[in-house]
Length: 224
Ligand code: C5P
Image (cartoon, rainbow, N blue to C red; front, side, top):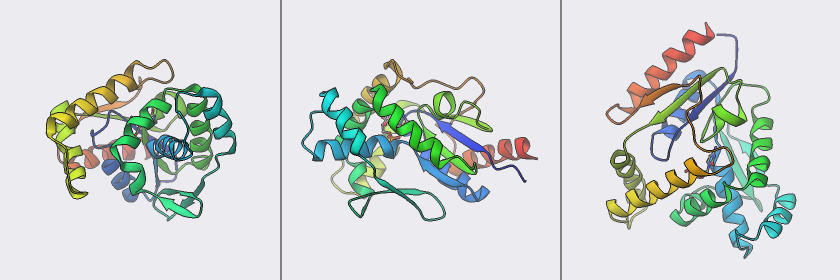
């Protein structure tokens, strides 16, 4: 396999994109990109700076000066702000909501898109999010769209929360995911859509291994 292209994985929250993306990247010797972490970082830092996320003028000024460092550990990328790698901080529920809010803004999307394209300029990346195959990398070598029913996605998210202790009730997680789906699917800028040329995989009753195996088969078909 000589070509090292861009592989995109889109889909709603809890569909398995990040787990599958990481494993697919590892199998191929590619780097993994979590595009959502950029939206999360914008929301996290803007709020920490005391900003009202609805104040577009202030947010625009903030973005011009916001230059988090992006480091690579050979498997993926990490965001470093003020010399500190931020990771767990970005997974908090309030950050998820705020990220979805700022992700509706054209200026924020442009800011993220530029950084993602820079990271992927030499190919060899698996990148996941909501618009990777539709807007950011329309010419990607291979595109996937992962989905699963709402209750399954909420149960998976609940397991993540359980690891951190103090999980909310399942109904609350379902409501939260449904609200985020609605926000991501109905916004004007780069709404969540199935890319025309994507392979759609419903992961509701599949194991992670089954999904990764299916993705790898498709990628190998295209690369060989
Ligand atoms: O994937 P993750 O849950 O980390 O994404 C957080 C939020 O960022 C999503 O709900 C979505 O609003 C936004 N996002 C996006 N486009 C992407 C990745 C994430 O709009 N490519």
